[in-house]
Amino acid sequence: MLVKTTVGKELETMERIAIIGLGLIGGSLGLDLTRQGHPVVGIARRVETAKAALAMGAATEAGTDLALVAGAEVVFICTPIDAVVATAEAIAPYLSAGAIVTDVASVKGELVPAIEALWPDFVGGHPMAGKAEAGLAVAEMGLFQGRPYVLTPTAATNPAALERVRAIATRLGVNLCQCSPAQHDRAVAWISHLPVMVSSSLILACQGENDPAILAIAQTLASSGFQDTSRVGGGVPDLGTLMARHNRAALLEALTGYQHQLEQIKALVETENWELLHSQLTQSQEARPAYLS
Image 1 (cartoon, rainbow, N blue to C red):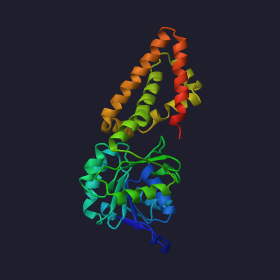
Image 2: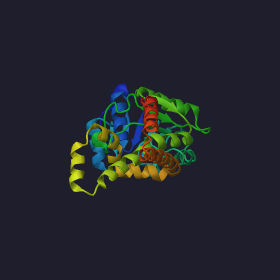
Image 3: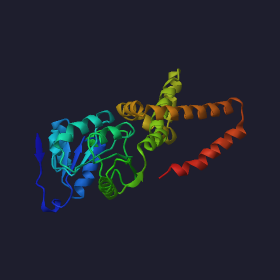
Image 4: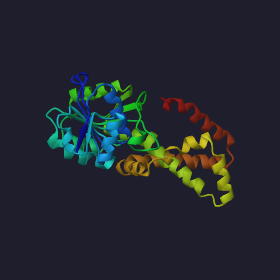
């Protein structure tokens, strides 16, 4: 199935880009890239999603057949983490020689070498922007503006392919970062995957209040502080599960570190060591600005 719009002459000199997976990230990429003048082929599992992407301007062509990547100069794989490698394998027979493949998955360590073995011009990528909601309906133009975009080249990465992906990401207005796949996974375990588990645990701990009246009051009183700290715990369960499954070792290390820190705080409260607790809170207050972009 293929649907398309008329592609004007202004698109002829722009790279032809294929986006596989038209959810929040893929749809938002499509909105930005079509606005820049790229011919964008959107590929989804469902015909309805392909039509919706076309209607909202997230693609200039759209369909459900992976063979539509033929002729694309750059291919973004925006599927769930557990489908990225299989998708790369499935599209390899249709790719043009020299086509560049990149992805947006939040885990890199196990994906990058697997895809490099399938396609020589692969560049691992991870745009760090999102919402609690998922799906094409919440895709947003400018979603990546001012947000980190990590590229994870290896010794096997083609420098020319890396520069092409860097150029596309730069035009999205992102803050580019580059590191190894292993470094990426350890870092995101701390600042992305751990917060999901902590935030979820916070919500479930509150839900453990056994007095319904107290729970109801707590829910009524919850305001910006609780909303901020619980936001990612209220996100898409499938995504959190995939993060844990595919970045298990780094997440376990982060959870152990967090558990140790929480036990320290608990001990200070139990022993009424308010001076040292104040010192701990001062340290966190002073450290926080370094994490704010």
